[in-house]
Image 1 (spheres, helix red, strand yellow):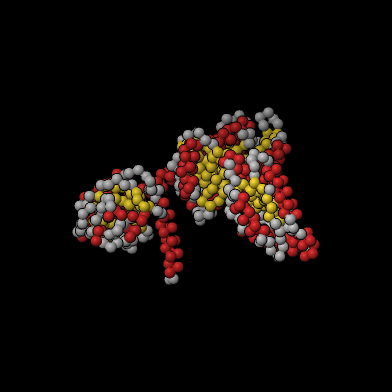
Image 2 (tube, rainbow, N blue to C red; image 1 turned 90 degrees about the vertical axis):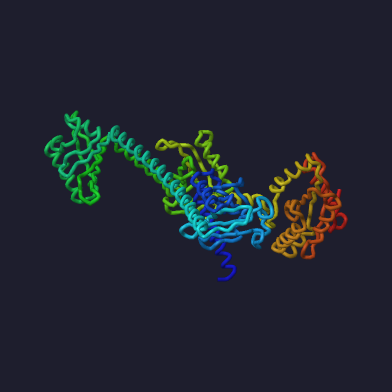
Length: 591
């Protein structure tokens, strides 16, 4: 393997290690007795005054548990294990750091706390990932016995076990919360279904294989002749012979074909009126594939045909809207763990599978610099202090890509839990289009420099600084000499090329604080903030001498005299330009 390939692999391994460490959500958490007991035991078994569980983060080593000292973290380069990097689970021991060339110049050896003895057992996961060390150390030389080294390694394995148990407990808790939300949703669905069955005027029923009713709603019971409950009865108990036989034949066809069918059936209501029902019947099949009976939904279409048509059209539009909607929905609990995500949300986060998103901390999808603000936001939403509408932000997908999103967020109650419901829209493409449109609106299409609108925007801040801080400001007008003659004799393409070439060399002659814009045709404007007259003269002379293709330009300049309008300053610069022209062109003139 080449050196470059090895370096690339090392970077990839370290990135994967940091992601694994992040998955434990252990960094910056309060002390826990399970870890503190192990560090105290390690110090006692090894006869060392200090010990720690050290976890190596991106640019620091953080101590989950410490015994015998007060530091909570140090920079990563101060980590002893970073200078050793064990390749296996063996204990690394330094008898006297002052005489060890690897540590003799270490700041914690030559200075406080004057470490001389150090021993560390790496915290190694089952896949070989090293998260940090369980280490013991002290200010005097010390040599561990083989038994002490075995004990230290065993305690390191116990630290790893505690980390795994802690992560598993969080995962189980998140899954339990997800189950609570799912159970609450199921109960809510059941309540809604019962409400529909109770209050709808649609007939809903189920019969066993013998034709006995095993379920019926109130609407069906109300039209049944002299029966308040239909359970255990058959159609022959309720209707005339011919009607009951027709219903039974239809049921038999459904169970025989093992597929749903639609029938038009007539029912005589208790008041003697005949109503036509559109009945959709379907087989009831158990998990073993055996037919248990038939279910049905019958709608009185005598008066509702028109209403059903309108409803069907509205439902079609509603479903089309939902199916085409780019909205992604997630629910996050008080611990910041995702307890619900729809398919659109999973795709937005970078996975086709919802299962890869559930139970993950929402922090994993938030850029590191925004996580603190996001946690405060979730807390405020849960407390009822905040509700977001059309809020712009960014998300980090599973592959690391940062995307621009627009979100709504509000607190909702699910299964007795107060959670935050997020609705996301991917605005990355729209944001890019907006930036491109803004660039187009503020850029001269031929030369690529600022146009008049952009000049006006840039100058507002510069003029404000010049007025309030008394800063120097020079404004110049540049005009290519005899450009029309050049354009007519060489052609428009050559003229455009001259303007482009001049713009390139002129901009390269300016500082990053200067402003250069095309005013129109062959005329350009320059603003030189924080520039004296002598300095500006030198800059403008340099620009005058850089016109390509053997051509020349004339430049007029003046100083801004606030609080006068910028138009007055430009008028003076324009007069200076005419003066430069009158002096024979290829001149720089001021006023």
